[in-house]
Length: 194
Image 1 (spheres, helix red, strand yellow):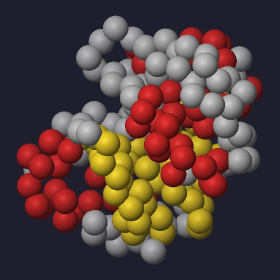
Image 2 (image 1 turned 45 degrees about the vertical axis):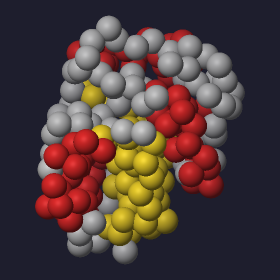
Image 3 (image 1 turned 30 degrees about the vertical axis):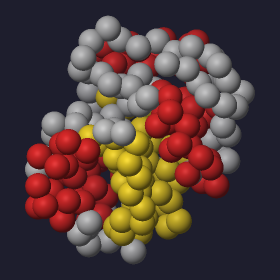
């Protein structure tokens, strides 16, 4: 796993030796960042299920001014800390170890509003859907007016969860699904305010 472009280009990142953390593959990350290229410069980024810090640090490398990196696992946090040290990006990041809802509540309390929100939760969970519902119900908070949310999940998970799951992913009151991209087994859902 490495930084693909920008000031930290080619910097190798640490990844924990566990199957609990699943970093975004380089080819998916490259495609993702080409899609959101226009949002990155001087942006504030939230990487809510950060794992290794991979996506937030890639955004910083490409010109984001700040990334909030959150995870609720000790191993993930130690990996995020070591990767921010490897990239010398400590001045551009905030690292928190919180349950995703506690993190979102802290974001609201601190009046932080983000240009880009990365959601890459464990695939076999409803954490991504729950997060999208929470953000939708808090319009005017958390996501900027012209901001974007990228939710990464597994194609087999949405297939297993049948049409009902797919319907939920397209029916948030204040969030519009603006694009959906497939990369082998990975699906990226892109949302903006309605």
